[in-house]
Amino acid sequence: RPETIFTRYSLMTARLSARVVGAGPRGAKFPWRRARSMQWTRAGLIGAVLVILGLVYGGRSSTGSTRPVVAVVVSGAMRTLPECRRTVVKHIVEANPSMEFHFYVYLTVDTEAEVLDAQQLVSQAYPNVKSVLVLNGKQTSKAVRKALPGLDRLPAGSGTARGKASNIAKMLLGISLAERLRSLPSPPVFRHQLPEAGAAGAAPEHSLVLRLRPDLCFCRPLHLSALLGTAAVHVPWSAPGMAFDQIAAGPPALMAQYAAAFALTLPRDVRAGRELYPERALGSHLAAAMVPLRQLRGFHASLARGGGHGGRASFEDPFGKLRLDLPNASFPAHACATARGSRQGAKRGGKVPVIRRRQL
Image (tube, rainbow, N blue to C red):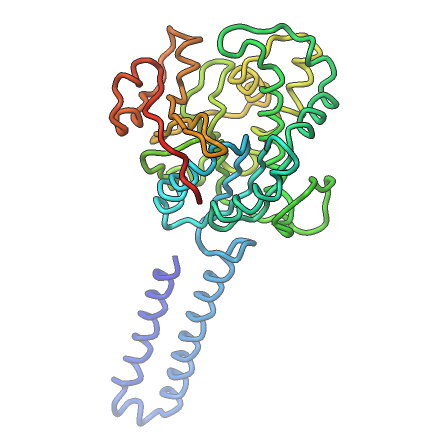
């Protein structure tokens, strides 16, 4: 630590100075000793300064920051981002003042006419936005069909995921594209298409990667410092072969593996004709890649539904569908329902009062 090294050098310098000051007649009798001691004193001071400067500037990341840098990769539909973006700033960015945050955002909109507005909105929604990619629904559907021939022939599935194979594929594609934005050199901020692999320039280094959906509205602070230096991906809930897909945090290398489900595991599932379920598609991928999972503690958020185009937004339990499909499993409590004063909504799995959409 710089302060420890500085203290050691200060003590060394003080001792050498004391020898010179307290030399008295002996120093006068042997003036060469006084000169040599003063040279050592100056050498000690110079050495201390050089060591401290080396630690300060050598400890910087490639982003130029001395603080841990968290890459927030956001992927999903644009609709309710305005309702939730303030909660991300308050309960994640401002709740972790010792960290620096960089945002990489991939969003989908309904039509091409909405792309430019969405780009501008995102640039104002989050602090320190490094890269934004917005695609319309036709583009994402085309990309999914091209990458996964046979997706439309999969079994319809069951429960809340019935008939949602295409949506599940788009979700996993979004996770991979947001991670791709993070791994590329930052400029330009607005991307109209994703650059080819191996784009020129050095990718930024990050201490931690946090994956979010844009429709997650947080109601309590999520503290991230305990996750630094861990060798695992943290999710609020997991079970054998299953993993919660709305939020995850971990070191960059493991989060890159987390984001690779669309390219690595999903094609095999489609070729095998397997029924798709979102948490199972991600969980089986992480199990096959041997990515260690740990529980993400302190996650308290709601899913914003509806909204968009001046409509009303309602807020739901992010574990609501899992509770319906897996009634015998245990899930974290939805504390945000209580915070919004809707115990009845929490019991029903569950919606909480609607609000008018706020404008940026």
